[in-house]
Amino acid sequence: MGLLANMGLVLAMVVVGGIGTVTGPILGTIVFRVIDYYARGYGGEYTVLIFALLMLVMMLLARDGITGIIERVKGRLFGRRQRWAAAAPATNSGK
Image (cartoon, rainbow, N blue to C red):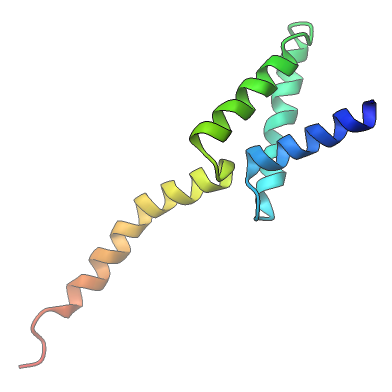
């Protein structure tokens, strides 16, 4: 039964981090290990509850995982600057 629990934990790490990227599972592992470390300070009985809530929130709100959130934030912050910079030289330079 322990092997099945470990497989579920690995799958949860991949889903939370982001499927389809190399950095996604790494970020998911870091998040789960940090949560595990701090939840053990309270006795460890809240670890599974916190993992389940995190999985539920990620599957409902951020289907791409943490890497998807990072890509969207980067797109919003830096995408506008690139569009503005590309639009500026297109002013009536043909005459």
